Length: 483
Image (tube, rainbow, N blue to C red; front, side, top):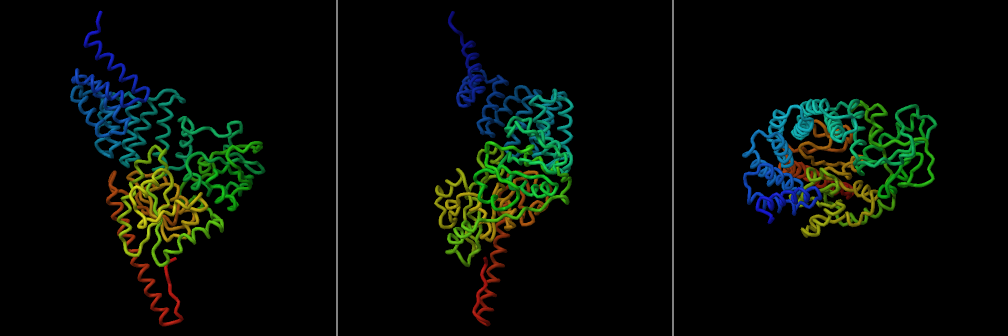
């Protein structure tokens, strides 16, 4: 018997689902489009189309697809939840929260619906409410090790840290190991869990990005003061910077064989085990020893720019970081800073976003210093010799803050929990100034504020130089210039 039109449409629907599961989103989208041409009243297919669009990063089309599904089935809680997720992706957080509230009203016993509501509330900076939603989700979630429960526990931990409830937050933060996204390093070694470390060799392991490693270095001296012999595993890019710093009794290369420590400890577990339960208990950033050869190299590179306010910029973190799109901006955002009289911009950007500098043809307005920097030791030398670093949040912000370099950190509406609250400063880095979005996605306001502040700083420096020139003419001829 020949296949009828209904059978052919059903085959397209199944092919679309199979393609979506296989990650072939363009094929899935094409199948769903063909199904909807024949059956525009199929709410489930409009929903599937929205799911595929969202996974492809086409959030506005996802929103429109979910709304079409809801026209056909306005009471379907799953459609409301999917719509809320796509609205959150677009930064339309109030609409996202409203959509997720409709989802939980339709399915109050659904742990996933409460979880999604909690995430939307967190992205709206409504942290106490987000915590309530996560607690409701945990009360409905399956057994302890189920993936859904692990994800809820992780998101709950992040909200606790945003609220400054560190004692609870650090304990909950251990949920990161249940997500399956971080490999357990050196699993053959027992974990140190806070028992008396005197006389024990503890191998401290980096676990996430470079920024978290630089952030957590401050916890090594307190650990040594407790009597531990601290071994620090070090990534190659940080070796020349950390090797002379004397922060650990021994620096260990990644996966170095034939080690015999007594136990291992992931770096970001240290604050909880060391009892850092509020901001007042934070150790200060550690002193770093920048290699003289790096200092000399950067001094030569900056020599032609004497007399100008030298400002380093970074516009993106690691492109593999899942949330990078909410903290990164295009290079063009920084061009307004190049208009400020007396300012010279220097790119410290590494990785694929470096290409934007060449593609835009922005030199010499933005001098490509990063191309001559080989590792974090060189970048540290650059931070030390620049007058200021202005950037979106990534590892260089932690490096500059650790070195005590003035750094202006340009933040999204809900940034990393480290920058919790509404202040323009953070106890983690005294030399850091925070510029915050007043509403989700509003980078215009952030850069307008940063440009005004830079113009004021440049005018202040210029006035100081002029005063130094005048004093030099009246005295011994010395001229004061910005460093």
